[in-house]
Image 1 (cartoon, rainbow over the protein chains, first blue to last red):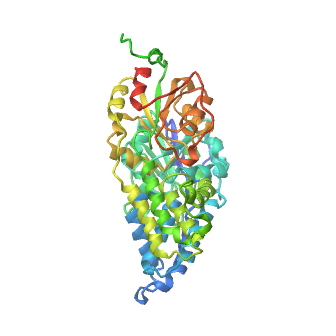
Image 2: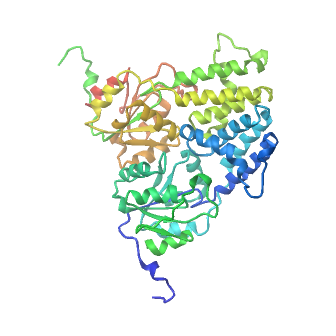
Image 3: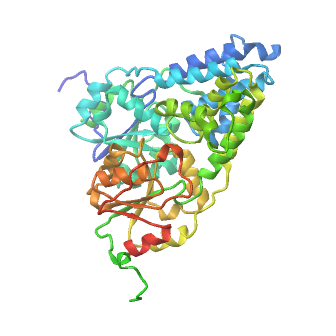
Length: 250
Length: 250
């Protein structure tokens, strides 16, 4: 045993049957593409915004609030994913401009969406090595609340498909969604560990139903995903990167 | 035994573990709402269409071909469901009008989609009675290639949720999709029967992997769903309505 290994690294998580992985911003980068499109969208609608609400250094994301408001209004109807995002951008652009924005801009927004759907997958560091190491020991599922087609396409393009038994789709990543998931997998919740970048969506509800959660923060967190309180729980660990899960699971 | 009962009604399908149900136009009406919106869409873009392609009695659906063309082009990227349909309508309207259609029309198209997503569920005849009768004997799953959120919302609003173990989502209802489905359900294909209104999507690929198929034609069949050849197969039966499945399964 090496002396420099921290003691905590030796506390293994035992009796796990299935590992659930979040996909976007856990296995591959996703948020930067949304942010990039939000910037382009901003440039497109900027001239129609009232001067009083101009962009300032202190609140660089203020301009997204009309879009966020539309997204929140539509989320029950549209759900998550790129198509919902495009539709909310179109609706916001028409509303903010009182219809003056023109159909060229609408076509541009549709093209932003198509580019997002066609974008090559950029894997996070060490993902392949980690999945390769875990594969002989666990059944692994990809857990998503986005559109199935989006995620399935991404999984195929990522080259990671063979490591996953299947994709589990939950309508919401909340207590109800994860309860259905473990029931569907015929698991005791304590046999399930979820790995992801969002405390709110990937970790907290899993801990609440008795499962385990390993949190890997992504540098930027989506505005809807923020949770305020730090998590302290015997089934919880915060990791610096995905590679750190190996010492806990193998 | 009643003399008037046809002999074929007594040939039971045996060893079935799981019944898969198609949802749209099998459990509840769906196509009429799409057709209704297509009519409204037609009225919206009609003035921009070249006179040479005017609507005639002999080809009442000719006017849908530019929309169908857009849908087919987008299907790999967008998949199925209402959001994909809205996006393809917007794209078609802008293209057909060379951008002259205006943002009011775009907003109207978005509202058509929201109305579709909010529409109350209208069950097909006898569906509740059939599910109630089958429920004690079989595990039943809803099989869909649409957006999960659309279908989950519909299932909840239909009041049928308790009859189904879960929703199975397939990217495409083809051989690959159904192979994954039976693998995921840990079934031998012969232990699976699929009930639905589309030969192409619900029946033929299931028969090809060794499963059973019960076809209940819907009065109108979607243009993309047409298959030309009649199906003759020992695992296949054509039913007049959903109630007819009971004599085969109970």
